[in-house]
Amino acid sequence: MKNFKIAEPRTISQVTSLAIDKKDMYYLMAGGTDLLAEIKDEIIEPEVVVALNSIPDLCYIKKEKDGVRIGALTSVARLAEDPLIKNEYPGLHEAANSVATPQLRNMGTVGGNLCQRPRCWYYRDPQIKCRKKGGTKCFAFRGRNKYHAILGGGLCYIVHPSDLAPALISLDAEISISSPKGDRIIPLANFYILPRVNVRKENILEPNEVLREIKIPPIKKGAKSTYHKLKERGAWDFAVVSAAVKGTVSAGIFRDIKIVLGGVAPVPWRLEKAENIIRGKKVTEDLLRQAAREALKEARPLEENGYKKELIETVLYRAALSLV
Ligand SMILES: Cc1cc2nc3c(=O)[nH]c(=O)nc-3n(C[C@H](O)[C@H](O)[C@H](O)COP(=O)(O)OP(=O)(O)OC[C@H]3O[C@@H](n4cnc5c(N)ncnc54)[C@H](O)[C@@H]3O)c2cc1C
Picture 1 (cartoon, rainbow, N blue to C red):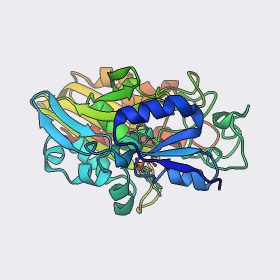
Picture 2: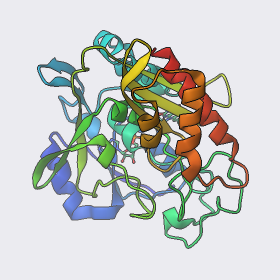
Picture 3: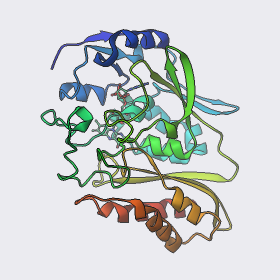
């Protein structure tokens, strides 16, 4: 492992100006649970690691009139334990509790979870130069691809690994991004990009930008949310398939529904076609399965991951029925 320096800025503007000087060789670190593994495995070789946890005041969960604000440095554990999140946004509470292990939830931050790099075993292998690392080939395409994308792939078949992202997107969360030009606010749904937009990155952040805050609007009267995650093992694991569902149900009918999947595409994947089929109809297992099947006509499974289509059907009907 190559030596690197640690920068300990005291303000966000110190971070954004640091980035201008050092561009690609400098990496932001929050809890370090993902970044340090990438450094140790020699996937990345920073010259400078910028420790965001030296900045005070980025760790908070605050309820305000226009919703809840979450500082990017808030730990996943604090989010998982927060009573306000548990009562008002149960889907996010469930997603936070499903992340990794208690130790990782204590160290890992909400911002780091949303910006974590993919777990694809070809990307994580220092000997392999896949497209994501500047190579010319996706090794998953004709290789071992049991855990890879069935939607939105093409140049690269990574899946989005965060549990918090689908849950937050289903809740219409927005994020604040700080850059040398100031702050901008965008929907979290617009943060992530597909490989065909830029195969080297998973989100729109430039090297001089920092994810500073997440904001969730107040939940509408009568709306409920949930997060269901299917894993290969009972112990800690990433989602093979997950579904975040938010909806307003009355008399057994979804008046409004939003479905976001994890673990199936390079970005959290909105299932709009299924939402349109379900909205306004009496909810039954058959309807939910049929909606998933219809929406999944655009799926393009690889040799070993066709089973994910069936799992999506299952996770969707379980999640949606739990809200009725
Ligand atoms: C064994 C294991 C199991 C796991 N299981 C799960 C799981 O089940 N579900 C799940 O969702 N996750 C899982 N994870 C991932 C874990 O949740 C993330 O590693 C963690 O949340 C990252 O947070 P961090 O603060 O440690 O980020 P860091 O490791 O510090 O950073 C991660 C990435 O985000 C960037 N970054 C961090 N903060 C910011 C910011 N504010 N602005 C811009 N960029 C930033 C860093 O540059 C880096 O690229 C697992 C990880 C491990 C090691």
